[in-house]
Image 1 (cartoon, rainbow, N blue to C red):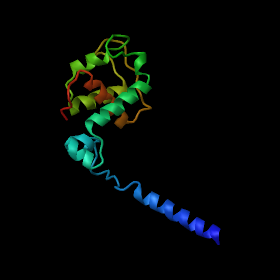
Image 2 (cartoon, rainbow, N blue to C red):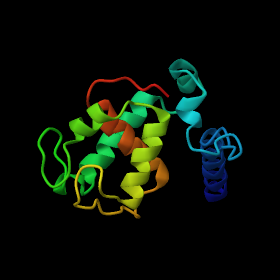
Image 3 (cartoon, helix red, strand yellow):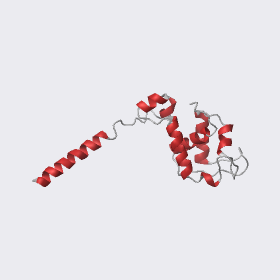
Image 4 (cartoon, helix red, strand yellow):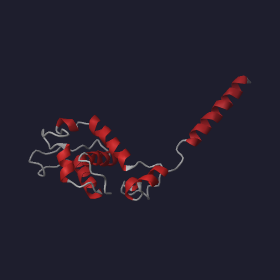
Length: 147
């Protein structure tokens, strides 16, 4: 009998824990382009709604860049095979259009903008992670997001 009561109590606790997690369901229709987090909401509103602020996304982007193979070709301030990340930040204004452009370059690779050596595609990344990485790179010149 004690085992049954203990099992019921544990099941109740597990049910409560699962019910308290998750909370809000994501609506794919509301975030078609992946920018709902910082395109339509001010930073304070985003925090109230449980969404990542641009600053949080930049921090996540830094972690992604630090954990990736970016350092093989890019250095924050010195030219290696590719341009320094700070030069990229200086060249491109921190806008949604440029975040899209650079995240596409991260995902699909490219050449000709910074020389003839091609940037390899990074097909293992998600588009959202590529956006965060692009946001981090664009933040390196101190410019605030103009999204």
